[in-house]
Image 1 (cartoon, helix red, strand yellow):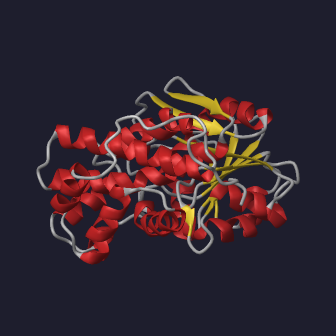
Image 2 (cartoon, rainbow, N blue to C red):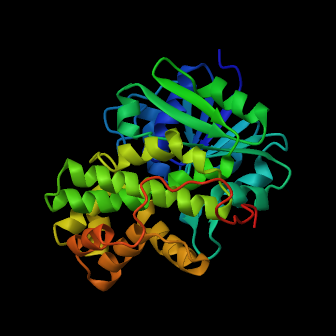
Length: 346
């Protein structure tokens, strides 16, 4: 018998796999989706054919399009929707959710216009709630195939970390913990930019040496930018940083990598996104991070280079050449207290 109710908001591929893992652990999962036809399909065929065809869903997963039905009585609510819709979905959910419900974001993105991460939106909209963020190298199709996978749950509250570990852990899905919520979440958002660059380079025939350089320099940029905003740079050495970066910069299962591949074949950004057919958060994140880095004076040659490729017609070879000739040539830059940080709650 199900122990208690858990809600997953968002019917995409990742929302689908975590809903199923939780259901396999004996919980009654309320799976919210906007599209009523998809709701009907999930409830009748136990499959989400739009995002994960052929992946059977546990009988404990029950889909809803009505928000009140989906969140009422749930003790844990996972929000797995694109960043552009995150705030509106949270606002729709809050009137019906329990006051003591744990709210967990799985969204890897930044809100346009505010430069807020999803945890900051949760804190604004539900200031008294216990919140957490989940991030890591979590390609949904590999999780669906039960490939061994690790993720990170970050929260200021030990009770949140322990609860998410309990409801999600399985023989093939390991949940690690971290208390640097801002760093974990920022790593998940930033790596999407670099996955596009890696896809671009791959499409143009650049080899493993180039990919390795791009990944390690990307990690340096992520830590440099994160430290400036107040994250612990050591967080980027974990699953939510380098772990997620390596996967998304090397796998065609990554939507952002596929966008880069399409760009490398000569498609414009709109056509590249259309070819992928799903939300690629890196495209939106790129603009936001580029402008924020300019404001703060943070040196991010790869971010700036991709921006020039997409919006000003530069070539990836020009960008790699500029990286090779850049002024800063330290391999490992981190030194304690080297750079002033900002308050991540600002």
